[in-house]
Length: 129
Image (cartoon, rainbow, N blue to C red; front, side, top):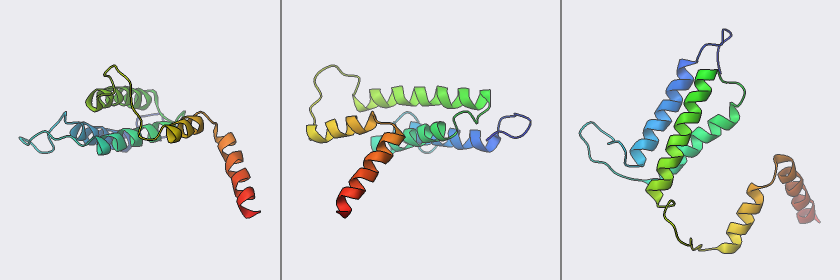
């Protein structure tokens, strides 16, 4: 995303900062409008954090040092604020509405892209039989 000279891409930085601002608004950290009330929408906040994470993953090894530091720092701060805002930092057991689905999700999260592609291929073959 950086130009030939290795300088920071202002458009990329503005995109990341815009997503960061939206996440802060949805976390209830910043009002949407000047003088406005704080409001919280954790679903949208999580979506904004996930978008920054996707950008970080897709641009890995293609960012300047400054761009990489910005994304890393903002992502860390937002993830920490999300955990606190959602109450995930509170001790105690977490009750799941669907423990079986959580186990499946955890197993899929631990798989590499190649393993996921093979699994999908195997499933597709079995469905066609």
